Image (cartoon, rainbow, N blue to C red; front, top):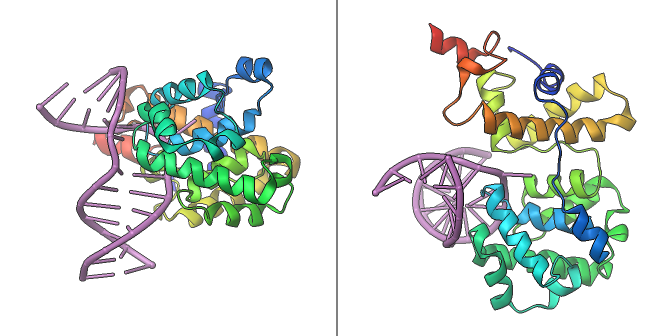
Length: 235
DNA sequence: GTCCAGGGCCGTT
DNA sequence: AACGGCCATGGA
C-alpha cells in the first residue's frame, strides 16, 4: 500500500492546514442560546448525498423559525418542515428523518442531549442506527462532531481516496473504519484521538473537493509521487 | 443540457 | 450478502 492513515493525516495537515470543521453558526447559537450540537445533528441528516451549500440554505431557513431545536422539530407539521429544508434536496424523506430523530430524542431523553450522549459509545451508535434514516456515516458524524466521541467517519470521499492512493482496496464501511482506528490509535494518545479523527475526516473531505475530485487534479496534487492513481496516468 | 454532491432505504436476486 | 432504483435541489 502506498500510504497509511497516519501518513495521510500528516501530509494533509501539512499541505492543507487545520480544517475548520464541523462548520457551525456560532453567532446564531450565542445569540439564541440554542444547542450547536443539534445543528450538527440536523446537518448530518441534511447533507446525506448533498453538497454543503444546499444544506446551509436549509439550515438558514430553519433558523428563521428557530427550528434548530429538538422539541420544535418533534412537534412541527411536516408541511412546514419540508418547505424549510427544500433546498437540501430529498426533502420529503429528510423531513421524515429529522422528525424520527427528534421524536426519538424527545421520547427517550426528554430532548436532553447531555443525557443522550452520556452513555457508552457503542450503545449510542446502536440507538442511532435503530432510527430510520440514520445509517453508519450519519451516526458516526453525530457521535464524532456533536458528541465528541472517538469514532472515525467513513464517507464516499474517504473510500475514493483510499482506493486511489491506495490505502486499502476493501471499501466495506466497518473494515475501513477499523483500519483507520487501529492505525491511528497506535500513533496517538487516547486523549487526542477524537481531535485526530475529527481533523482527518475533515481534511479528507477538503482534499477530495479540491484535488482528489471525481475527475482528479493529479498534476497539482502533493501525493502524485506516491499515489498509484497519479502514477498510472503518467505511464 | 449534463454532471455532481459530506447516504440510506427498500425490494429483488 | 449484494446490488439497483429511488429520492431532489442548486451550482459548476
